[in-house]
Length: 207
Ligand SMILES: [Mg+2]
Ligand SMILES: [Zn+2]
Image (cartoon, rainbow, N blue to C red; front, side, top):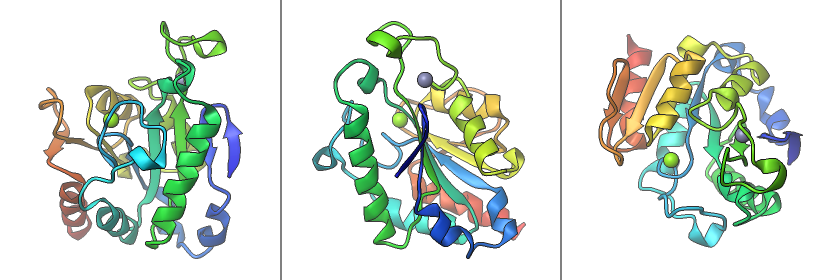
């Protein structure tokens, strides 16, 4: 695993399959919040043993990939800044997730995380950063790193802060998986889970 920046985890494995993708599929991605979208949000999940995949997630990710989307996780991880777990713990868990998904032929393009918190974090982690959602920094970084067309991209989150980050980045298709109640505002599609997002993206591809 290659640590590209403080807030970004890019995957060295990407190079091995990048070349197999066509240029058309390189231009769009689904940005995925992690906790509450991919795995159940138990609060500060930091170990694989606590990582409970939500139903249908692996198939949904494979379907998104088949539709030509890159898969990019954008996750607030203030538990690092708060001292609940370390960057190393997060990297180890990320590696386990990457390897697990790879075993199901699902390739993550990148995982971006924000370890900061403006008031509750310790030391250098305590800051008003531009990466903690609802700030769009992680999404914008992904768009730039992978040369994506924002209007063609989708973002899936369970909280209003996720949706807001996508909005500020100009992401074309915003999806909320239900858990926090419906988010007010135009342009957000409510779904029950990740397979629900696939239905919309499939319909979009058929338009
Ligand atoms: Mg979440
Ligand atoms: Zn941050």
